[in-house]
Length: 158
Image (cartoon, rainbow, N blue to C red; front, side):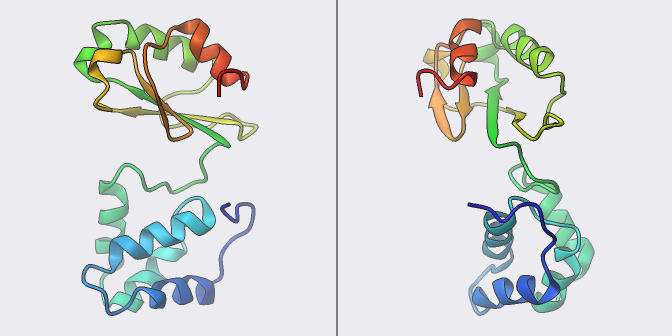
């Protein structure tokens, strides 16, 4: 479980980074470790990671911003990634997503003010025959409609 709610110290980030030193391409494993520990990659972690790896802060920030799964703020307790690829769009994913975002009162990539839910776009889950599809807390779900998504949000059908 991520240690959310407090800011990591430079020493804690350095310790995480040094666990992965000596590995080929250590930056990605370090970033994954930081996000696993804190639920996101905090801004203050970037210069520490850069220093440990002898990279510029811009290089580290470039990797964080390039990969969509790295976050600069903690995700909601529940994360729904709605497929926005063409096959899912053809069977109603856009309307389903609009309904979900309106119900939650947030936009793409945002978390509800109470921290309960985050909704993110994803471009193909490989569930094209089962659209509309989404990852709900990391679990693939297909043939979603408003009722099925509401049931998932309410903790039913887990």
